[in-house]
Amino acid sequence: MDLKLTDKVAVITGAGQGVGREIAKVLAAEGAQVVVNDLYGERAEAVAKEITETGGKALGIQADITRLDEVKGLMEKTVQAFGPVDILVNNAGVPDPIRRGEVARTHFIDSKPSDWKLQIDLNLYGWLNCVYSVIHSMVERNYGKILSIISEAGRVGEPNLMVYSGAKAGVLGFTKALAQEVAERHAKRPRHHTDDQPFDQELELRSMKGPSPDWIPRTPRKTTNGWPKC
Image (cartoon, rainbow, N blue to C red; front, side, top):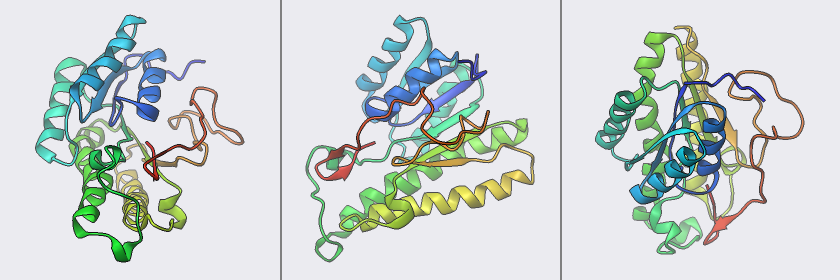
C-alpha cells in the first residue's frame, strides 16, 4: 500500500491512545512525519517513541486544544520540527473529566451548564482552534487535508448525549461550510468521518466504497463511562 504520504507533515490530536494512536502509527508507516498530540505529554511521547523505534518519524507534543494559544504553540513546534502542516486529523473528542468518571452520562434536564462547557470547548471550539491554526498556511500553499472524526450522534442525535451530539453536529456543519469556502481558493476540501461508518475516501487520494480500508483498525464501538470513546 502506498498512500503517497512520504514526508507529509501530519498532526493528530488526542493521539496518545485509542483511535488517534492507531491513526498516527498508520500515517507514520506510510512515510508521513507525524506529530502526536495529547493533553498528557507522557502519552504523546510514548506513542511517538513507538513510531520512531520502528523507523518512523514522530514527535510527541502536549497541548490542550481547547486553548488557542496552546494550539498555536503546537503548530509552531510542528513547523520548527518538520515544516508546514499538510494533514490535520481532528480526533480528540472525550473531555478528560469524563474519562476519569467525574461526569456521568445523564438526561439533559438533569445536566449542568459546566458539563455542557466541557463538551462544547473540546468538540467544537477545540476543533475550530486547530483548523484556524493551520488553514491560513494550507490556503496559501493551495494544499491541505483536514479530517474531522465525528460520532454518529452528530448526524442523527443520541439520547443522554444531547450536548455531545450538538457539538459533533456543529463540526459537521462547520466542515461542510469550510469546504465551500476553501474550494474557492483551490485548497483540498476538508472531510468528516463518523466513528460508525467507513471513511468515504483514503485521505482524499482515492475513492473508497464498501468496507473500511484495511489500513484503518476497526474495533467494536467502545465507551468510556457510557460515552463514545475516541
